Length: 106
Length: 263
Image (tube, rainbow over all chains, first blue to last red; front, side, top):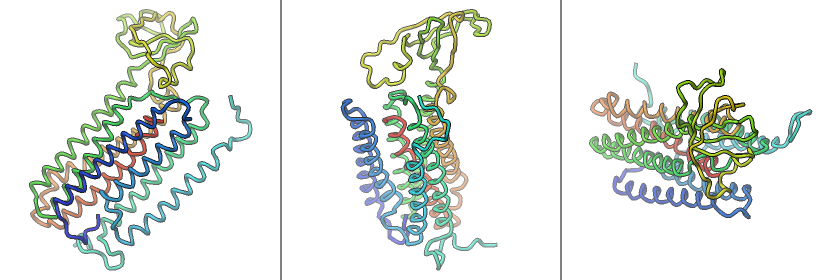
């Protein structure tokens, strides 16, 4: 929350209403995708649901945590976090099928 | 001794110290939950089977809405402080607290539902699966005496218990089983399988964050709010910092809900 801007309480109420509507839409969309017929594989469904979840997270982080108008210091800190998080997930995907020698797969 | 930069921005960072502190803390939290999500991915791709439809989507969606509302009331509580309306702050923060407790109540109900859900392997090779209705007074698994009644069904194939989404019209009824016929009996606790282990770990840690956040919010709403009279700007910053933590907890749930309930 960037405290350098003056606060207008009514504009915050409007902003919150939009964010809440967006969250409701995202939740409904994710549920709908998860119940798509079986010819959509789970891999496709997971990918689509995660895209919607990322959009939902962007709305919450951007507008409720004020990340769209933050100070450079916060962005720098978050850039490091994103770098290490991406590395963690990258390593996870890289090692996904790297089973130790002797592992018996059923 | 006066703590520096609790209200005024520090010249080199451009923000007050507590805000840098909470963002550093949140960065470490991202890595904590990131590690657990990484564990989830590895467990899921390494599993022979992964359950679908074991968690009630309605409760997950309800909790998502509850947390989204609480994130909004937290923001409005901070905005009320910013414009100097302490009464509105009290109202919105009380709403946040009530919503947090509602979230935890729903979660406890879901945990209880899993705790009384049993999978019982029988000596004839079939499996009784369902929620506990009652155990007879003399029920003793070790001595093989008495009976247990479940509200559920008996299946021949364990695979039928994994993908509940693809089965339509599952008929549930009261099933009574003799202790003498039981080979193995286990409830749906974290020990039951990999999915439940990671489910309880992820949601349990998240629920602890909700509990911790609720305690802080409760303090700032109650005894901690005395600071408003003494130093309103510093108090407003405290609300902002606690709010940032609360939004982060909401963000984590935004990913937990689809990962655990929908996929």
